[in-house]
Image (cartoon, rainbow, N blue to C red):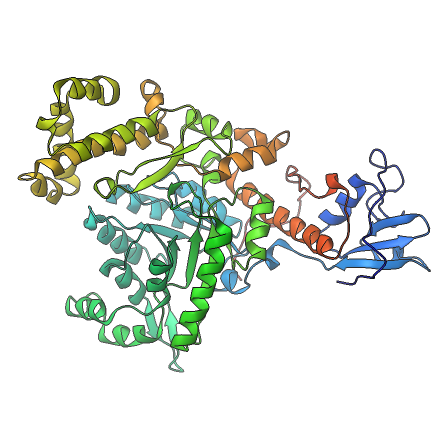
Length: 555
């Protein structure tokens, strides 16, 4: 970047597009108004020069337009979207972009979504949390069939109340040779997450450690991040060796390998979240990564990415500027064509604003008081779920609930007698995890928790299925990024849910992030750009792509 001390260069306020220039700094002349300056900035494959000539301030992306006597005030180089973040992330994961679509539970991040992103060179994680074993098996098979040979991830969520779920997902990932797992909601390491990591360790012919199973850990607390930044605990590794789940050689190799390849600093997101500001969390985790790396002296550097609030190109660019190796989106993908969500829910999401979210008790960690962030507009789930948790804390059993309170719960929340709910709960867990019922046999408070979790668990399913009689009970995991995205795409083709294809969203986000980064570089150089030229506007994909490949293929 080149600057001169001639004061902050500012573009003149010129009228409508085309007045004063001819086509964005093309061979016909420099760009001087907002529309044409915008065109220069969006030509990412070419540099952008800000010049002062006899006619004033202008922008060009062709050095031949810098006439004799013109002064170059600032310049930014070409910036392809795939040059943002860390080049190691695409290289190690075999994708094109430092961008990941994070998992959304209950299969909302569907097989169709994962395959569509994989075909366009983006890493995506299947939302296995809460999905029955057989359906996860089917989904992984479908992804392999629809995106043959292409990388993807599967979510492994920490389930302290249903440990069998962790084991089942790891079993399936190993059987299907899924080479990346996105671990989320972990409070500590568990044998299953360590097992997955170690099961992929080998040595090559030169004796170097090869990591076959990559792990992306999504965290929001430094103490949890540190566990993933370090090698697996020796005691846990010994237990896996004794159980025959990893080999002695893999245990030996594990001493020099961190549990995670990538740690995602998750800020104010949908679902499980501590709602921490990204500007606080991301630098903290990067500094922690560097401190642990100095202590261990490891040659491998764990990458740190950013998630939570990434709903616009400006937010993605800000994350990259803070040092993120990659960005992860979530809420904005839930309203995409490929998301496994009902059309009714997608319309609610498309109408959300940044302040339309609330916290509510989670189904998987209900007894611990853990909360998730959900959409508040158009549904009463958050207030109903909070009421259930208040009743749970105030009573030791269902029988201890006052008749009037119990009647209100049955009429306004469950819409059926609690005895019937318990019968359904027994049938469900008898097939899925019988230990849940056994543990509640002599524990009336735990039995009450399982009954209340019936509502919390089914509410997301009602949203996914579009149950017309349960709209007020829809549990829709959502963060403020959804509202920011809706605001950004207002008046564009992406305002319509029917046009929100997930790979297109990803491409627009990354292209816009590169554009915004160039704008920010010029601002740092003191250039005062026209306001209307500084916000990236998504435009429909070109139809004139004859002869171009229609999918990303690994070389």
